[in-house]
Length: 140
Image (cartoon, rainbow, N blue to C red; front, side, top):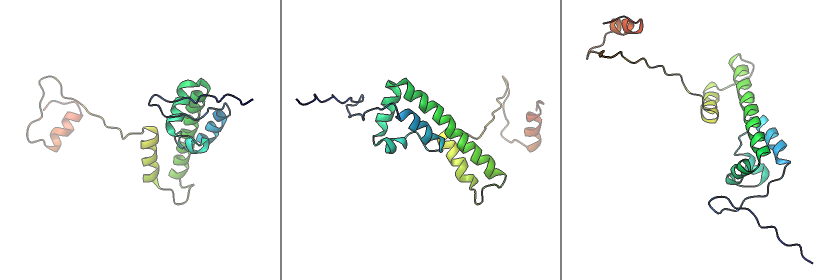
């Protein structure tokens, strides 16, 4: 007698999902520890990205593996940056590293904005002295 076929799950948009296997949890952490992305794990598991996100939503252990793995990926990239900054990695590309950190981990250039107090306005002609006085907290 033939085994009844197991009905495959679908995501919210109706796409078929790959079958989740508990061993994917450890494989995902291992993958991310190498500095690779969560999304590229889809190629290892031979599924689409939507499947990975569905597994994370439906399997708490996979979500935990994702979160732990992303922190290990961050550690990988930060360690690389520290080693590169002190010359331990020949040919290290600081711009490429910065680009990666901004896009993968949300790093941003710090921008501090000081607002004027109530009733204060910048005049049309702002001199260096006025800017320095403002920065030092003095009135114009």
